[in-house]
Image (cartoon, rainbow, N blue to C red; front, side, top):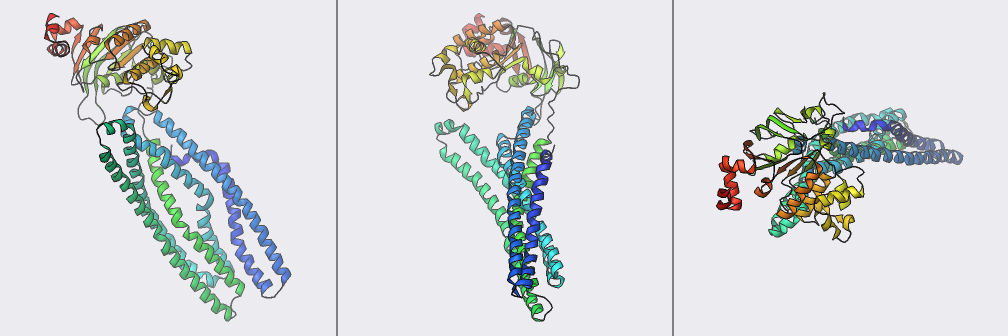
Length: 575
């Protein structure tokens, strides 16, 4: 799907807008002709009735042109704003379908720029295209033709100047397009720095890095300002060239017309008519620099939007996916799974094999970078495996539709993300049409209900952007409540109890057992892992050992050292 394909539903309003524009154009091309006739037939013969007749016709046509202009503006605005609305809607839908691989290709700042600045550039260009972009070149063409109809000898000058100016303008547009493409990339840079600073304002203040970040912004903002000035100066510099050539043409027309009028080879009215057409052509050509600037920026923006619209999402339902198939028991199997990130040189996970039976609690521990989170992201198909197979209830996850697969999984990520809204909104976000009783029960099981009731507005308390007004533990528990309200068959907790004290975490995990779901929990706490039915010990993308807490203490030196680092030698050796 290409960007301008979104104009197809608006064919009828576009036709009306162009029809009104053509009426305006026809009037503008006829008025100089009628002015010349009024001069020749009325002024030169001192015939007041003829002057009044042609004057009345010209006023009437001007009113028609005014009405046509109003209708043209109305339909042009309607098409451009509806077009912009549709692009933003489809762009949002497209990004929602992105896999994690796609999201890694485009930084958030770049996507925000596409949603705002790029769409606005194209939207404004569509409005201009319906209002003046087509009218300006048609005015030039129509003015030249009408000039030849009135007096071919005087109009010959147009055959020299107009083609040269058109070639010059094409060259300007080609160069300007590259310049404004750079401008849009620099807008991305400014947005990226702003986004990072707004998100990390507390950290910046804590580390007293205000001056450093100000310098980063100044550098990025200067790049944008310089590239924008360069582009605008280049395009604007074409204006004096255009006006100089057209003014020379106008001077020549007046000089040569005067000679012909003195010699009796033409009339004063014809000279005035040709001069009027020359002025209209000159004004239209002077608008070309503005049009070129808009087209150049729009071309860059269209290219950036088309990149997104034509991007291969990749993460789609497989052909053999069964729409009716859903997770029933929650059995999870990884069979010789290997996975490599798109930009990585070596596999993140290598030959991973394990089974988690229905209702079992499986703990996954390991050093940072051992592949624990990557292991989680493969189960709901946020990424696809390089090789091997992942199965749920003895069926390959490829046989599930993405919707059914993910509906059966409650996933709590490493960094909890809350949305702007109330606490109720954030918990109910996990399940459509969740009732108040379900929300409260999920909050109780996530051990956050009592805390919520102490807040001034309780469940209607507003959550700031990304949960800025809540503590880390509160955000984690609300995220867990959001997962529990789904009553998932598989619950995935990616180190999402790290901010909880041991007593709260213990009560939470005990409450989770009531959901009769298979629980996969990434943790760094041996106290948490020791309560699991089995433990997977990972390192460098491989499973080094698997078993119960006591079994790993006896068989794994690495696990023994981890326990020793957290509880001391006496505890580890006693076990």
